[in-house]
Amino acid sequence: MPLQASDLAELDAPEKEFLWTLNFGPQHPATHTTLRLVLTLDGERVVKAVPHIGYLHSGFEKLGEHLDFNQYVTIVDRMNYISPLANEIAWHHAVEKLLGIEITPRCKYVRTICAELMRLHDHLLNVGTCALDLGAFTAFLYAFYQREKIYDIVEYASGQRFHTSYTRVGGVLFDVNQAWVDKIREFCRGFRPVHEEIHRLLTRNRIFIDRVQGVGYLSREDAINLGVTGPLARASGVVRDLRKDEPYLAYPDLEFKVVASKGGDCYARYLVRMQEMLESLHMLEQLIDNIPAGPINVDPDTKVVIPAKPAVYRSIEGLIQHFEVIMPNRQAGSPQEEVYAATESPNGELGFYIVGDGSWKAYRARCRPPSFVHFAVFPHIIPNHQLSDVVAVLGSLNIIAAELDR
Image 1 (cartoon, rainbow, N blue to C red):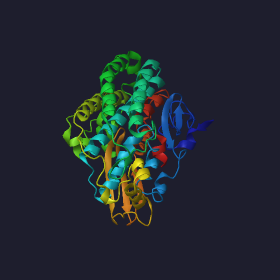
Image 2 (cartoon, rainbow, N blue to C red):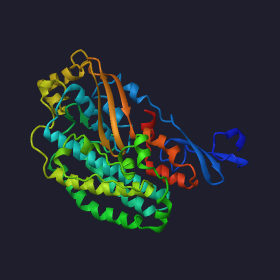
Image 3 (spheres, one colour):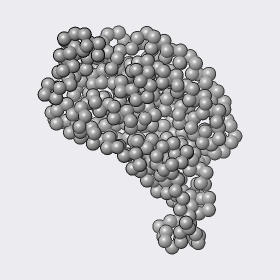
């Protein structure tokens, strides 16, 4: 229904007699998730946008106080469900910092491989669905076929395609073998031609460029002041990447470039993600050729590693080790300290703040998700755009609602 301009004195268009309120979501195909925008329109021009969250609230952070450090991995899986393994790596990266555990070189490489596969997975979905929302259906098919191949690789390692629950304190669920490495090598060989095809379909496409170039501009200063990270920040000229600035896992051993742009618009974000996919591919090629030998998990004597199921079923030593790790009265304790640790997830800085109280659970588990910060940026960059630009800007931000509502 139309609203009188006098009822919206805070808006910058009081000279108009009528302004309209439009609900964009929570059920709209272009939101890709359950979120809502209340748009105030002057004709086709967006005057104001108010984001509404809470439609997917599941108490994720509160569950961190009731599940132990290994059990909680099933919950972080479901925050950014587009790249769940990246969430697991970030969670156990923080837990291991709290416990003072140094994982093995082999585990570092395997986790780094998984992190870069998730980056490809996330960027492919973003590029494919953004193109689909703007009418470019073919690029969407190319992107999603490559995602299916990544699903196959992840399933081979963990036994699950989507919510893998693969990482553990001090290691991972299963070790990998040469067949897994060969599957990644085959994927890398086939990915470049597909990436080039997506590039030919979109990067110089006149219709696509008209829809995204100059739209949703975010300056470097605003990106810094608003706490933007990841591809969004780098597309606005903020050259920051935790893989370089605060190296972790196997990233110190790798050669790669931090991709950045000064464009600051939706087109620049698309280009940054496209180039980051090539950098991830370059890292994967380095990683699979240099995976160290040795154990995948830390020493079982630390009493933090869950033994493999065959060992539990077939040996008394494995059964005792499982008992020591799982039973609450036998579990190792955590320091009564607080830590914050972050990784460079596909969307930006994904951090976990953990307070230890001496038990094998977190007294408090707090998540710093990139989507929560980036969704708050939307009202700053959408005013004075057309209604049709909302889809392009929202897609370029890559908002995941489960990260918003935690």
